[in-house]
Amino acid sequence: MAEQLVLKPSEFQTEIDTYKTQNAKLENVKFEAKPENVALDSFDKIQECVDTFNRIVKKMNSLGQDDVKNMQNIKSAWMKLDEEIGEKTFGETLFGK
Image (cartoon, rainbow, N blue to C red):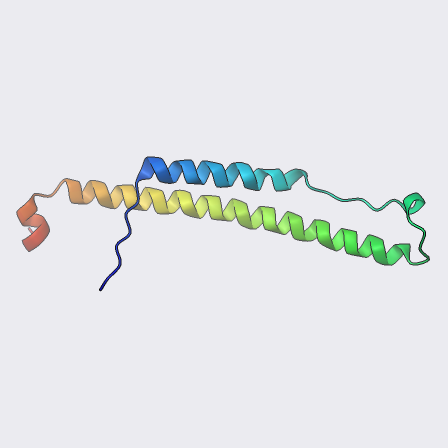
């Protein structure tokens, strides 16, 4: 049996907005390693790990922004299709023009 997907544009927009807000919080995430707070000989390795982590967070934010754009595109395509279907009569929908 085929599954059905129902997309309600206003509810989906709320989900998009929530996701966008949460993803925006990643933009300001940045960790720092301060050598005066570390009692290790290999501070360079710690700094390398911190730098790698910051690059990963930045990439996650970028991917999240792409997700927001894709969700907006899905919503737009869905609404366009809904509008096209809404303009047809019941007979046209079943049997074509």
